[in-house]
Image (cartoon, rainbow, N blue to C red; front, side):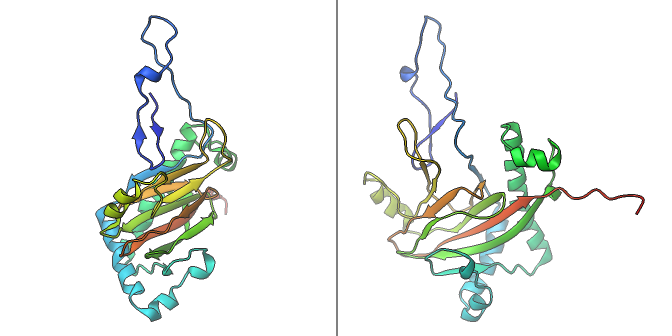
Length: 253
């Protein structure tokens, strides 16, 4: 049975009593959710978090470095700082790069299985087995967000985009538990939007961030981040990537 998702991004199994049964056999209906964009969720290694947070701490606490690596002019966020990530150690840089590339590759392979990789099929002549070399990371940056700050509705460039959560305020969970008593808890959540609201469907999808969580989604998928109202930094890393097909080398050259 395919799982349904609730507003906060938790999996919910449909109650068996609500499934239609048309005869005495114990058959179950299948719910095919085929018309919405796919969002992949996974968890990055602790080493990844430590590397990016180490660089982030160095840049964010130094106003001169924050200015040098400022990336806010290219973004829409109404947040404290948005900076590029100068990982100097080549081994660390390669490790982090390949984590993101591997996630995008996994997403692409799943879209091939779902028969939704239309542009990739045309570009690659229906290559069913893309490799890491087919994923090119174009940009990555840190978003340092504090109380009352937010990110308005926007989309990215490329084929894949991702967000990785690096720090969550200590009081965020307590704040969320109070917030959930409301009819529409949203503080500190990321929300995705696609299509228009109609009967029997939702046009939005919310996810509650957790440290180490990575979300990968199509770059054109609109999303926003709500403000929150407790003390502490909500730090995330965003990136864009696209797929490429390297030209074959001509042995005669």
